[in-house]
Length: 356
Image 1 (cartoon, rainbow, N blue to C red):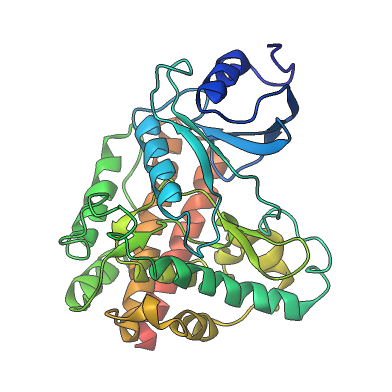
Image 2 (image 1 turned 180 degrees about the horizontal axis):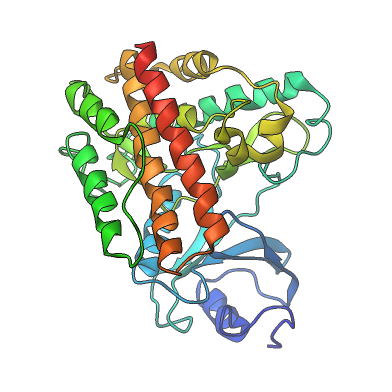
């Protein structure tokens, strides 16, 4: 078949894709309406229609990293497991886990999402209606509780992660990550006020009670698609950090990144954060807690601990780009921006601690 002119064969070879889709017994016909789609990561998203049905193809970036294919396999497995639940997420139509089919890249086909990313643009009626924006925030928490309610063993993910000792290893694992940045040439080391204070507090106040479940791993407003006509969450996207761990860390992550005028966090939510009208953190926790099958066996009274851990972990992740910028492996402007967000996250962590 003819390769669409706007898609490089090295990214998606449509002749290969056509043959593979035929093997999967998917509806045949010409490939139409091929369109590159934006995403929150460097992974490639291509929308198209074939046989009267819409598809989105997801694969890794042009230059595959060491673990890219494994990450795509994990994503596809989790999204497949969520089929039949009420979690708002794209549904996997078919997955190609054999990297030899598409020139070295694992890929999968999923259902298109009718919605928009509010961290990129805020259309009407959402832009002019604070009540809709308030409901969007509450629905972000409710969508997350739907995920926390899923029994990971019942949906076939019993062997997906290493939940044993999950909370115990978090601080040490991320302090080691931060120390590893020292191998990058030119990086002077982390200049993060409050780093050791936060790490010490986390170790001293770790919750004793928790229940494993599916974690998205990067749950914030930029990884949600909202319905075009109202405040519902159309889909949770970008599942590349998913695992089996403590789902309350996802809620902590939402609190850690929640827009607050006057600090760097609003930048993570783009136009929605700038528009305001969103619920406060306490309202998010209340909305999440309304679902009993999400909270059973989980200690919501410790949610501040999870928010502090999220600030700590995300701050260290972002500091990695700052370190790579010193070594010439990332743009200085990007490194400086993410470092400023890291500092803001640690200030927020200390504020959370002070509120206890």
